Image (cartoon, rainbow, N blue to C red; front, side, top):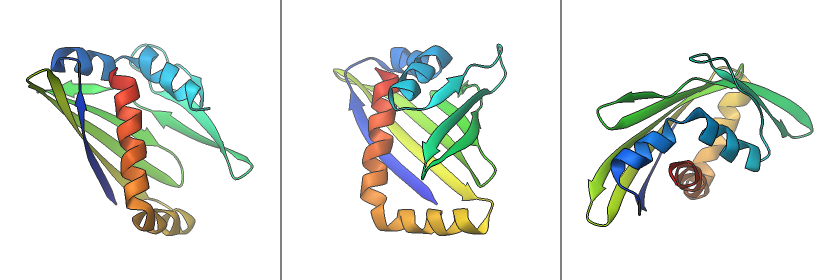
Length: 137
């Protein structure tokens, strides 16, 4: 399933890209959201967990890959994985970030959960926008 959103930011594109690719900044934002994050060594994925429905859900977050104005981060867990790509471009007075997340289910339960996201697509888009804006600064 694909979730997309566009965000106008006050910062220039170069600063937004630097912020989006900063693992310490991502870790800080995730911790504010209640995610327990264990940073990896330089270049290795961060290990993280989130309590959801009474259980710890573990996942890993790959280091950001930056290429031609696009920052890509891969989130991997047993039931599902996601690829977040944020393309940033300058505009007068700041920049615009176009965020696209592709979620892929790996289990039957995850397939049902991903299908149910279609019913709340607007909420998912707003949350994606909030996350990108928080990390981008």
